[in-house]
Length: 82
Image (cartoon, rainbow, N blue to C red):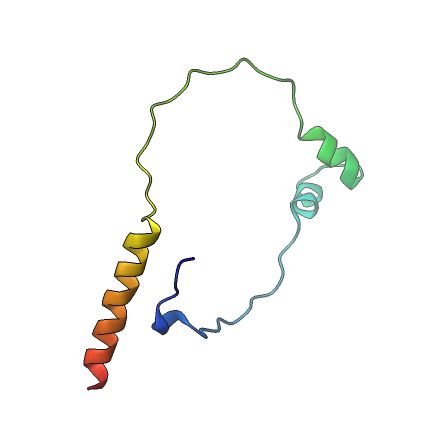
């Protein structure tokens, strides 16, 4: 399991106000119908399959790389308190 750097532990962010749902925005922009009718309208006909793309590089570190990074951050934080 990946560890969380100490400087992020216990971080509390202020909550914002809830926004409109996608359905409410659709109604505000002229959609007429129930929420279920709107949901049904999102599904179109199946299209043709496209060509497979090239494999990309994984942008996330391995668990070992992550833990090494966290250890380095922890060590830097310790240096700042000595």
